Image 1 (cartoon, helix red, strand yellow):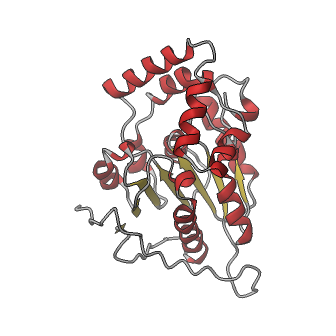
Image 2 (cartoon, rainbow, N blue to C red; image 1 turned 90 degrees about the vertical axis):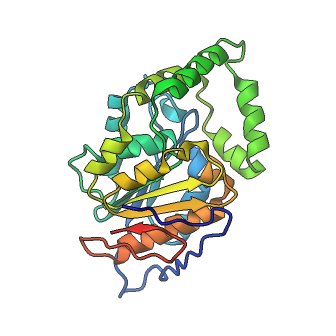
Length: 280
């Protein structure tokens, strides 16, 4: 199928208009589980957690193995699946949405394609390129070299974070600690995933959300072609860390997904404006 085109420099026209929470005639709000990116932790989702709380939505952000509160745990694909599954089961009964960014996006797709638990929607951000081949090998070698530095790359990480992000976003990233030594094992493990095959297996709607300037959307068309039903959204003037760089736009997309899952029946049929490509 052809992919609808949109101008990545134009602000997306998202008319979310969520209903006021608590009204008796409104369907129950879905709950949301967030999976963070590499080296970070669940604290990176503070802006999203606060936004959903204001909408009356229950949300939780986990820490992956080797990160945050689980920094002493060994990182492996199996361990990540287990952590996500356990957190999913701890969410309130009802409709549930899984959201992941970068490493978290790949893991969200990997888990959603295999779990026996009901999944109502997946938002996968910053992960529209297959983690394999020469680019991944070069990234892994670079991570190994950085890990040999006396500070394990702490200064480099802090410098890049403060230059790329707002002070609030940088504090959110740092609040849960930075997992400097997890890079090599995480990159080794993520080489095992096949996000294209995962997308073909996932029956729930999948929203692919990418920054217009993100190099991690190099295979965006291939990923979008594998989606059964969902949306492809490109946020303008935004790089890889979409939820941190443009929390306003990302929160609008997130609120639109929450509203759609809340209002839809078992066969969720997306409806989008011209700025949001949709597959049904």
